[in-house]
Length: 226
Image (tube, rainbow, N blue to C red; front, side, top):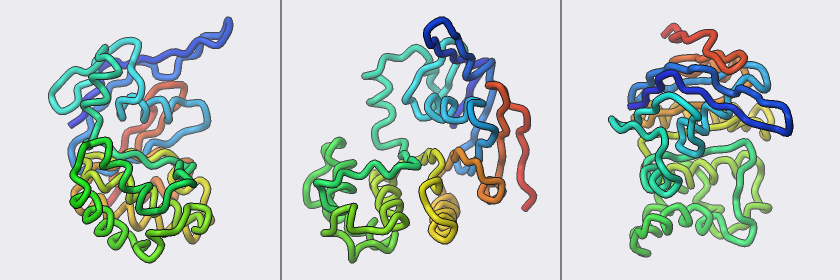
């Protein structure tokens, strides 16, 4: 599904040049659940952004579903990403002026899905994630756990093949965080590929495979024991 070959990425800040990714080579198959771990500044979020087509490498190849997308324009990446990749972030990124249902529906409006089908898919996804009773509420009227469920619903309503999660439990207490992790395991069991950045060893252990980064390189690539 995904293949990186000698991918590097650097950032320039004033006179300081930082290597975020250093000749990363990586294969991820459809249906995997991969946790990316490592200390702050090791390149985890940069790797996730490259995998999610939000950023492009400076060098190397990135093969996405059989196409080398390294060097593609932003417009090309947007078209490829739309409907195929869902994103969950530590901050829920919900729009306060919109209701819960409207926040989730927004993901389908960008795909030109007809209004009736949008409403049906939104209702079904909110019901699946246990927040259908909050459909007309504003995000600020929800708990943190409920807001993250809505964010997950928004990421999944387009039926993406891959879900990328950047510290999805970072703003949640342990109980709500564990709840989100159970949801992610369920989503993966249903066939969605998940790639998750996390600082939590216990959450990383719930994935089927763990990548540990250090200084922009993959230090450990290990399958979890069943």
